[in-house]
Image (cartoon, rainbow, N blue to C red; front, side, top):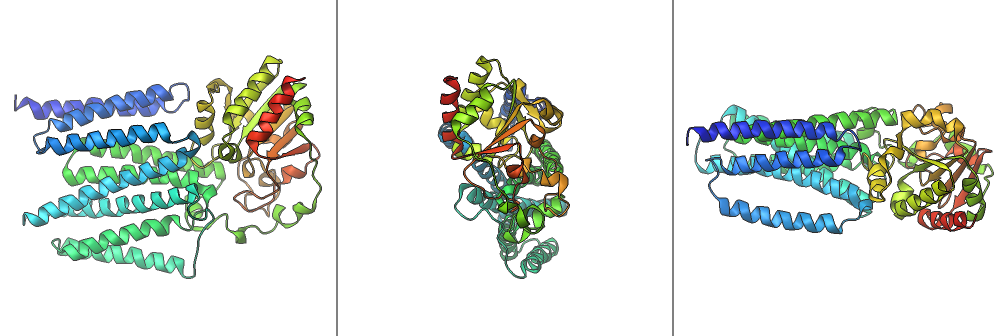
Amino acid sequence: MSDFLPTGIQLTYLVAASLFILGLKKLGSPASARNGNLVAAVGMLLAIVATMLDQHVLNYEMILVGLAIGSVIGAVIAYKVQMTEMPQMVGLLNGLGGASSALIAVAEFWRLLDSSQPIPLDVNISMLLDVLIGGVTLTGSFLAFAKLQGLISGTPITFPLQQPFNILLLGSYLAGSAYLIITPDSLPVFLAVVAVSLVLGVMFVLPIGGGDMPVVISLLNSLSGVAAAAAGFVVMNNMLIIAGALVGASGLILTEIMCKAMNRSLFSVLFSAFGSVSTATGGAAAGASNQPVRSIDAEEGAMMLGYARSVVIVPGYGMAVAQAQHSVRELADQLERMGVDVKYAIHPVAGRMPGHMNVLLAEANVAYTQLYDMEDINPQFEQADVALVIGANDVVNPAARSDKNSPIYGMPILEVDRAKQTIVIKRGMSAGFAGVDNELFYKAKTTMLFGSAKDMVAKLVSEVKQL
């Protein structure tokens, strides 16, 4: 039995890894995403059970206490957190993942130091990488949470000599790591390296604006996976290495998709402080605000929607803030009862996390068959009678297509300006996170419906019912 146990554990790890890969595959489609989560969860359960049977586990009581406490906290959070606050929750979970990985490295260093055992070079390097990536993920994710929650300003925060200071921090980390490789039993230097990694995480996210959070959250998710893989090398656990590598790779692929959707490089997202006041120069930001706009009330908007044959709804961050997704679905249902063909156009970076709009609309029980990606819906806008934009801004700005002086020039957008008529629900004429005016608001075919997304959509529902 004792000879079979290690083999059985490794075989269970292999099955769990296969379930992880299958779960990731299913997450690629809204139709199978829920099953994908379930499959991956079963894989994680197998991995946990196999690890609990490992002979290296010495204290089952503490593990069971931790599982119980974590399960209770997780259940309460899942029940209490609103879907509109999901980006903040994802940020926190990314940070906790990085923290757990970094703590594994700290605990292993402490154990080896206390036992007076020599620290192997490969384990030492793995611990240092784990501390760096895990520390950056922890404080970076918590800062992203603070920006999304409004605890601090969501605009890029910069100060003089910021980049030289960051280089100095990174140099300090590298110097400390080199010292620890030569003298691996120096506790003060190790603790200093841990502290530097935490500061690096803050400096990493500080100059990034709230509008870039989909990219940042995706990247931090990837880093949490890389940290877990590094922790796997520290404790020599194959399952941790595989699971961390899968999360790291999938997060990095998603980050690349987000960057392409914004037509910007990852370097630009991380270091250009995009969205600060200074970026709003030239192009649409320079003089479009002096142009007149056409404003309508809910009754006029309802008539345009009710008598249309085809309506495309474009949700944005404003819908999330107002928690208007249920009202939007109610409006769509009412229009469909009147014979109107209703579709939803989803931009990859609309909102504050990857798939933010999909999550909100799924909560409102919108059928996934009605959700269209940007590449699929853009050719259909010319046939749409009305495009209803709810709280979206930069992702529908025609300046990205026509104004070479605009900071967002070249960014793929939802081409709502090609629809026969466009209704924009917005509180006011403020610019988006890019800091530029939206040319769409001043188009001859565009009408503005000013007010909270939830209130205006509710009024539209009421007026449509009276048609």
